[in-house]
Length: 437
Image 1 (cartoon, one colour):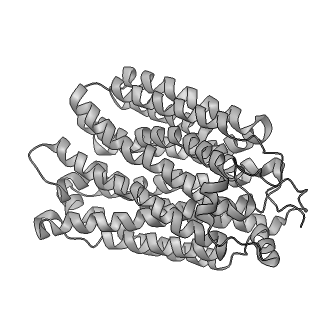
Image 2: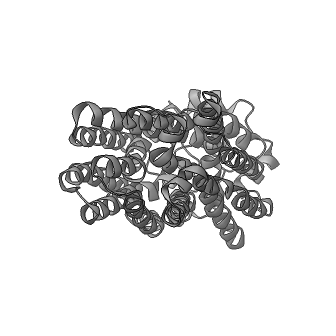
Image 3: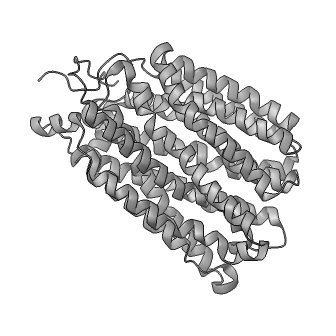
């Protein structure tokens, strides 16, 4: 059904290039996920009031999460467009373009008028800019993963490839940290009036820093060899769909559980804690901050564990643990004293899936189709998992009035991940380099 990944013996790794690639992958994805996460947090905390006002606060939040979902729906377009370019013109140039796109979109969100100022034009522009964010992120992940994984050697790939995975919690940490400082240092009126905008406008400074790092980056040795051989694909998307069917399905399914668990414990929990448990915005954000800080350590450690004990083993432990913990969380959550450890442990189980994920996905595809295949898997899983989850959580909570329905949703998502792991190849000891000509 699909061709096996190449298994050539790797040449000694370029350590200097590997360190630079790790730094570029980590910093770039952190900055892009700052942009993406600051929107996610703002959607949970303020966008319902500012862009979707109404008599029912839960309805406004639901509409705000609908624009959150737009960012995920747009990802496949970014994955298709930029993934194809990454296999045709190279990893480096595409990653500069994706960083620039999402940075400009985020900065412009900080300049938007609210519904009170511009009526329906305001939420319309918000959706357009969120769409642009999603296109950028959709093209980012596959290339960021390949930067470090294609420089690393087989026995250490789980650790080095996790650089791109550390980006989301670092970005979330930075985004929520900025919002927490603004929310804590300003009055409620000031924060709703202009304070939230500062977090979006800061994107310009952060993206400039990321562009400086990526502009000095070398192309990966795998793509350089593809160029030298003249073996770049002309229609990588159709070729992936035709020749890499099982790897693509396995990678998509494996990613659903982590996306849904993250949507619960890093995004929706802000709404649940403030609107259902009566916690303050600051308390809710603090819980996510602590969990995200721990993930910065847990994710590379989980990648390292996958090098030692196997991708699928570590990944599966995270999936089973996340499913069970979602039930425990809704049974215990009542105040900061219980929500804080609940979020932290939930994100620990997410880390056990997220750390090995980059290496697991990239190992499923052949070298000449790896950017496209990884991007398609990432983006389509994002629609199935991350895009729908906050909407489903909000809807189920409104209809059922209990978090246990949400827990059931998470259990199903983690079960889908286990199916994907079973379908995927365990090829972590093989090289990502090209086969001999």
